[in-house]
Structures are given as structure tokens and as C-alpha cells.
Length: 129
Image (cartoon, rainbow, N blue to C red; front, side, top):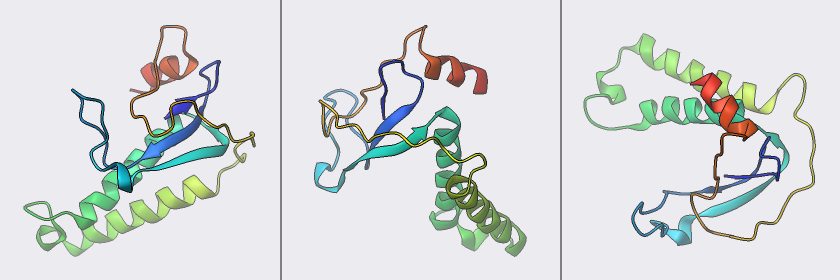
């Protein structure tokens, strides 16, 4: 993700399989997509997106945690969690504030957010976790 100058909200995200922590190179750059947000996204939005990703992953994974080993009630709960998460992301009250999309200097580069002690996003992250 990238932020505005004041680091009070996210302005975009690079989505894909991530990067090698040693080389900082993308794992599969041909499958990465960079998005510039046209609304303000904050830490709570990112937390909501990650919770949704976890619920979807629980429904799609293989192994001992796969849906083959879950009760029908648990599968229904995970489906409800996904539906609720999508609804919260797309229908928000009050709506997210519109902003002009920003083009970023380091297009296609992972791990760009530099959190500092003065960062509003860092402060929000600390209060949420």
C-alpha cells in the first residue's frame, strides 16, 4: 500500500502474491496489479479486507482445515462472514470520502509504506491491534 503525504490514509495498493523479503522482488510480477484508490482507505478498511481474505481462504483451502472437515454450520458461518464482509466494504455509512487517484513513483514495488512514530496510520494500527 501507499499513503498520502500526511500518512493519514492509503492511496493505492499493489496486489499479488507478495515479494521475497531478502531481494524485495515480486514473486510473480506478471500477476501483480497496482490499484490507485479514488476514495480514502484507512487501517480499518485494510483490517476488514484481511478478515474477508481469511474467511474466503477458510472456504477454499485444502488439508485438515478444508471444508471437507467442517460442519455444515461452520461452512454457513464462513459464507455469512464473507457476505457480511463484502457488504461492509461496498456499502459503508457514511460513505468513504472521494479523492483524486494518485500515480506513484515506485510503480510495481512492494513494501513501500514507511511507518513512523508520527504517522496517523501507525497510530491507528497500534490502537487497533
